[in-house]
Image 1 (cartoon, helix red, strand yellow):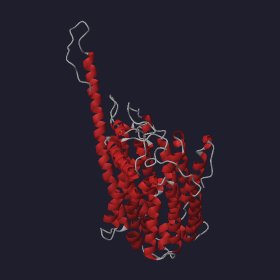
Image 2: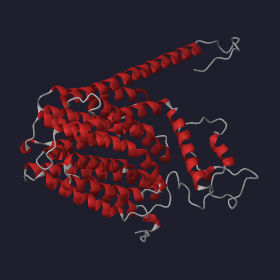
Image 3: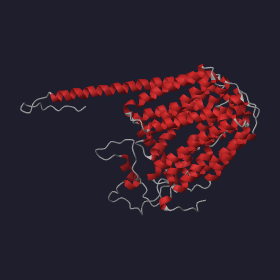
Image 4: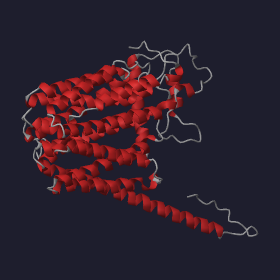
Length: 496
């Protein structure tokens, strides 16, 4: 599969096309908007309690258990094997959905779907190992856009087939199986990367960092402060007199290299999260993503509760398509909005968290399915808008390596929070709340997030106002100071 050798000028085109094709067919899953009606219908005949309490929580637990091992393995084996593993997991998931029966089989389905979501990191990280930095932004946009288009197209197709052609949910899953199988075939044609971000970061011909050179990395140059910016590569570090030459520097042992990577991860995370700006945006990311995933996992059960199962009146596919498209438009509009995010960013987090809380409470209190659909549209669009801003605010001053690391840790923290929510709210060993009351809890959860960031934004705005007043006062005092002919006070003033 690696016999293809594109010309250097077009070396980014082939892997980008193959990866986009993989992403399109992997996301083209028309069965997903109608998963709960399929499981509770005559094909599987499962009860709402079995789906809510015994089946769906398995995805959360397996995703949490697999995320960190897969994150490390993905970089170590250089992405392509993990993308292939994702394709295999997709096929197993939908084969079991089609032909498995009973709670146990569906729990295995959720486990393999947890594997699918845990391995998504390879899809977005792969491109950075085979594409030169000048193409990163362009290729990342292609890869993300194609999944958005595929998800929207799948939702529209599903709604048309169910509403107009009266197609059984079983055949929606057959279409999905064909699509993910096609994605698996495309994954086999991806070129094997020669490097990765962490374990295989430098080609063998490059200089390896020795322990003596690590001290240079650890200390910033005189006059500079150590921030969470882009880390210097070994090739940028000047060789000190008497240091070993390139021929004398040898590769570290695998165990030592692995330990060095983990130590560097710890240092990078400590340095990044020491920035208050990045810390609070990451905090919102983790807590909001946990709530968002929980809502997405159980919203179809709420819709079925509000409007009992009737094929002709279910519009899950249309709602998902509109919500995704609306969120995409909102995210796109962010690029054209000129806002001082350092000053007003956390106020935006607070206000839109209030909107999210209100939409979830509407979904709880309303008995009208259309109002419930509207609440979901508002909720998903708000989240997609804010997560776009959060990603930009976190990534703007980070290298690719540090962004991937922070993204992975934020996702892991979100999963920990989501698992705690699942155990307390959904699991039979916890409160085991009915689905309607669950959304009251989720709405209250986002209200607490809004309250925290409202207090934080009020403090930031007040501090900025106080600082401006102090600066204005200092300026006026300087203007009224002694004239040139008058003797000057030699006391040194402190700069604000």
